Image (cartoon, rainbow, N blue to C red; front, side, top):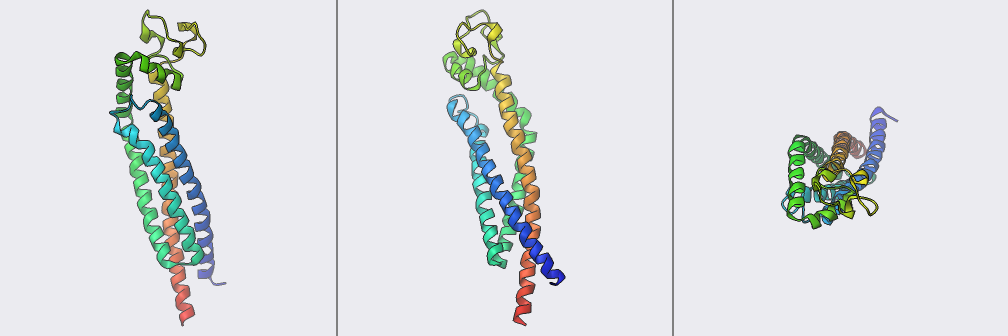
Length: 224
């Protein structure tokens, strides 16, 4: 087998393995979107004015579906040895890589503003509707914006503890800290996955172009 043939066969195998990785990454992104969407739906009244929180899970789910679909498209291109499909696949891979890097940059640069806005929303919700805030306490297993001290001398609600007879001694942590840690973990996981996937997407795009070129050369050899 010639050097070009070896490179072409290796490129095909790399693309197939890469697309398997992308399929799994797409499923993970969809899972992250669902993980964010569920608690947001449970406390939707709190996040009515926060478009970032409402759109984040949708974007993650859509991105996961797009990655999954394009990966399937790439597999078909490799199996059918379609030069057109491989070049199209490479274009979309580069586009997705750029979008993921952009998304990761926005998450990192807007993190502090997001946390400040989240703390403000929690405090406002606690002051405006304490009964509705108790639903947040049950969902996220927390107590008041800053902990039991938020209730001052008022008796703590049962939502602040695992068991009745709720006191400062057995109350949960403050909701600000708990919910911020929750979204920080989700954001960190999203950035890490997005950067890793973007690197693989760029590699897949280069490999796809190489395989497309190999198919083109192979076609010429058969023709002549």
